[in-house]
Length: 100
Image 1 (spheres, helix red, strand yellow):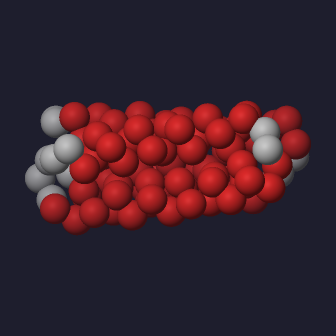
Image 2 (cartoon, rainbow, N blue to C red):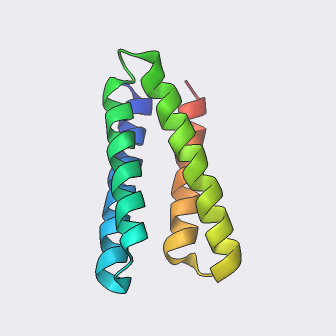
């Protein structure tokens, strides 16, 4: 597995865990659902990216979408946690993905 797959899986785990934490702290079902869906899709994308080109594009698409979502949340809330951290992690993920 190459670095793009590893990074996609790591960001997927972070998204899924973030959704679970968001639900536990704020009882936010949207956080739970979106975190788990995006996390699972990123993990799948990371696993198949080595053998299937669609895995790479799925990882890029979901990560880009999450970057936009967390940028909007950061502007609205002005809180580093969780929006700022996820934004920074998403941008770092995109940088690694585009190194391919």
